[in-house]
Image (cartoon, rainbow, N blue to C red; front, side, top):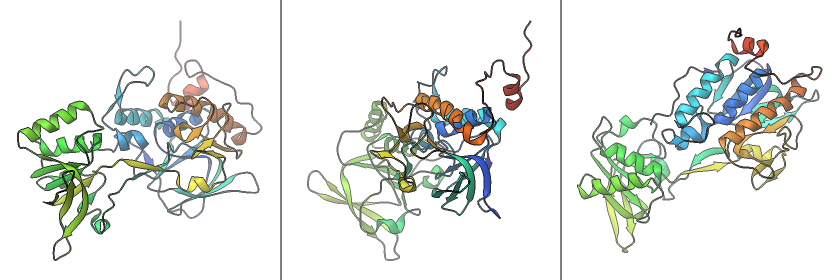
Length: 367
């Protein structure tokens, strides 16, 4: 369940002597943000991509890297990781630069109509256009609300699994009832390089929001005494004399509070989308979503576009394929800002020698 995609990408350095001048800044490196690079590239519009995560893929990689997706046109089935990998390969000809692990903190219009853009890490841009493709916002894990637990985050308390090997041979308590909790429970219980010394799954009730096959397998492992399942909620922690987390207190539905020893605590309460600084940009919003038109998916601020799950309009459907359509029209909408004196025509990748040149492919010769 390693999140990092395999194709090579160009991650730009975080510090620059001056602002980076670019045709477009794309906020969000999920599937729609990546396809926006492609649609802009066909129009010879150069883009830089900013994402709060440390890698591309957005929600697909964060929430279901190994889960099947069935509604991508002409692709009967792919995982979130495979979709991300394929999109990265598709945009390789356009040489987009990525800026990971940072959020856009400042957006201001300049006198010449362009935008000053600055990130949380101090990276600065001067952009002709901005594309917001941030899904439903930047994802932050929902945390366990227990006094003192924040002292152990990143050492003994984890809300995401980045390196499964660090949990091998450890006594684990896993909290949650969704796919992530069940998937990692099975991963650490079953034989393999990441097998834990022991695993106790804690969930507030006996019902789960996870794949039925995963739940059935978990109960099978419990029946075989290879792991434990407890109904209850973590209400407190116990620390050793040297300040390490040594146990959690689990209050059960039977009114009994049990002390459960552990080496590490993994909490999977899901990810909470936060609109973040985008909410302060002065854009027209409706229920924390950005209002756009349906001709070019432009926001209430000319030159700023929003595509994918973060936008709203009459009839909006939150589907990846809808975001792909929006990205295509948004690219044409942006062309008038990038090429104000040029008429941009619709061309087809099948037959256009110009697009073949842009894509780095040979123009086919038909008899």
